[in-house]
Image (cartoon, rainbow, N blue to C red; front, side, top):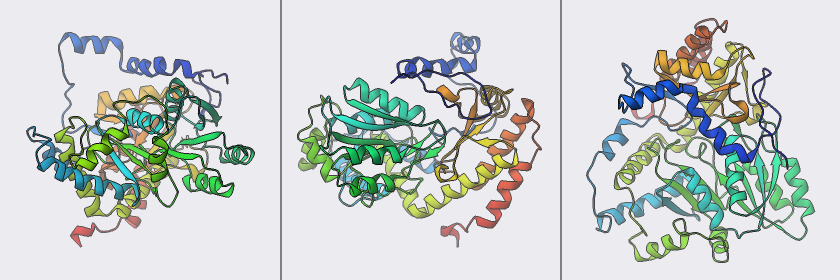
Length: 447
């Protein structure tokens, strides 16, 4: 499969392939958006931050805003993780983490890592080198996961779609129907592709596997979906699901949350991929001992996770998901009012955690991101790889409410005006406000 990288161009998400081999270098080039001279000046002056009055308005699709309650919970000294207190807390965390995956049969692992480490954990514990995987390339993060799969020496059957489209499940159905000998060992799919704002239909994947009685494992990246979008591990027959603490859980980066089905745990017994740090078996040994940790966890992050889960359960997970649906809908209404297009090409793929906004060809979207940060203390998401310069991203996930989002939308309008786009100030804010005024319920704890 030949993949090439595309530059800027038309007023739409690009459709030509990209080069997996240049993934890391293109990822590093994002630093140039802020200007090499500015960065060097910061280093010379030994600046550890760049001050701006008031609060930074953080609207990238992760990491996200951290609630004050979580910050306070993490503001504590270290503890002996072998004392009775930490295992007792860990036990309740593992029980409660199952709730956000919507599983009663899965086994969760809280690994001190990022989503990338969680990916590797999912793959190496269930598969052997040379195993055939069907994986969907629909954006930067699915691209990165495919890159990891290939570097771990799996036989990756890549199903590619235009960036802005969802996974092509018709092709999956064809491949599964033709695979009479069950050579396909796993289906890997990103539930919510953060680079383009595309959400895939996981229930349909399970339906296809069941229709043909295919035993392939079902592995899902839920990094920017779990705790924000509807996610049903047991009902959809997902074998490994994973997320990261810095997304909808609204924590700092540092915990990769992985949940494995009984089928995945059984597969791990025969999987021949080399793993050490990510080996589930090490965790399971300590689970049986009741001490839970094969190595030192972050005490502060565990207390933060406890507080974050408490906030989610107090609001109600279904209410959290409904809130994200409102935030996503309001953002899309604002984009429409501005006369701009959503990178996502069909409504069925719209994401409720991130919106990728396509800019006209005479505007470089990186200028929008740079201007927002430099003038308005507003952080927006850059366009990545194929969509670099073509889209900017508005993240609307985590511990976030309607008025916070309206402030972001007002900032975006000013930036669009700054860079020469003929937006009518207040148009997007008005569209979102009207929707919120008619759809936002009373806060349950204040009724």
